[in-house]
Image 1 (cartoon, rainbow, N blue to C red):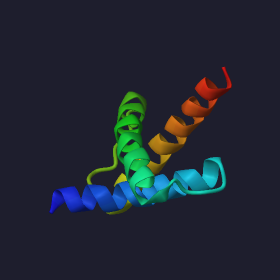
Image 2: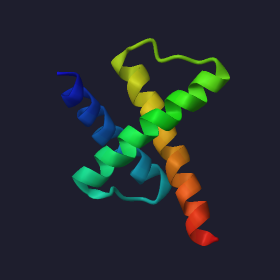
Image 3: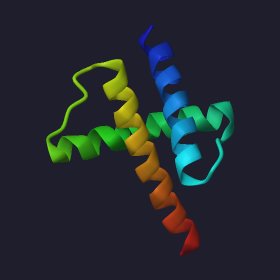
Length: 81
């Protein structure tokens, strides 16, 4: 059941990040990938800052969304270079 939870949170986080960063989503699979990679990035960044989601659904969504926004920002910088 954990994998389904990751996919749902990843899809939602990827969609939110897509809306914030470029005004649109990336499709279902793209949103899930961006959200899951974003969750890893967000967990790393939050760990460096001493923050934790404490395993809550909202905390996981916030962490994944912040990480996905960071990921999309870095990708946009690389694409411009």
